Amino acid sequence: ISHPDSFIRPTEEWFHIYLSLSTSEQKRIYARLPNGISCIRRLGRHRLHEWLAFFLSDMVGLDHDQLRKMIVSRPQLLSYKLSNVQSTTAYFREELGLPSNEFASLLQAYPSVLMYSIDKRLRPTVDFLQNECGGGKDNWVSWERVYTLYPRVFSYSPEKTLHPKVNFLCNGDDGKSLGLNRSELSQVVAKFPPTLWLSEENLQSKLNFLSESLNLDGSELRSIIVSYPQILGLSLQNNLRHKMNFFLDASVQVVDPATLLLSGDKSQKKTNGSINCGLS
Image (cartoon, rainbow, N blue to C red):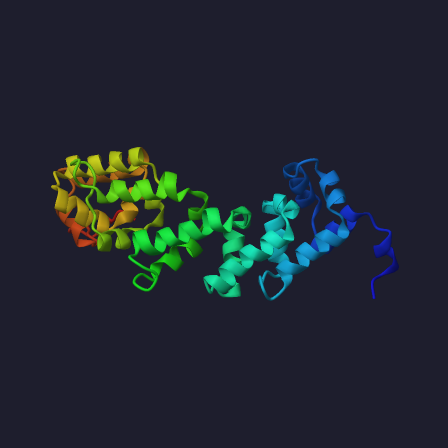
């Protein structure tokens, strides 16, 4: 039975108590909500309770602490229709077969995924990962890993960002791109999904740098990227250039840097064992 005070308590006070919000968390929420506290009052206690209770249900799987953190980070979700949230949840849980604990983790990492259209963004992105990167749902299981560990992939348009990036990585006719085949593309995306949304200028500058500084031909460069695509995520100015200069320093007795990268051995050292030359 509800406490009698619950019937007269202002909606925003009930909301604070329900989520156990600290004063600082309340301020963060209202700073991000259009019209602040007025938005909570307009939504009303009944609608808010239905919305919050759904996320605590077995269908979603959030616990109370996770729900509070999600609302504090993305309070705009509160104004989203519950029916839309339920449809998106059903898409991930039932159509994609995502277990509740993995769906809860996905929401913690990127709650904005709930605001995307299933037909215009979520399903096309998953189809892209399955078919363009993996050659079919049953041929490449890593497509699930990509969107669960990197849910921000849904923030990028398949038409404007993802498809053009695949063309860039796979088209070798211009003499600048890598010319990856489907198997190599699958390996690169599985090991380092952000390759799909780093800008072409960003990628090309690093490919050019590696090719020129190590005097690599196309097949050697391709082998390095397929083996260790994470290198494309390093900052050229603040990381990659400094490390490569270290490799090329004549005073440092290491194996040829291209050989080191191609071998995938990150533990090569000087003969005295004092210097680790890995790119990690």
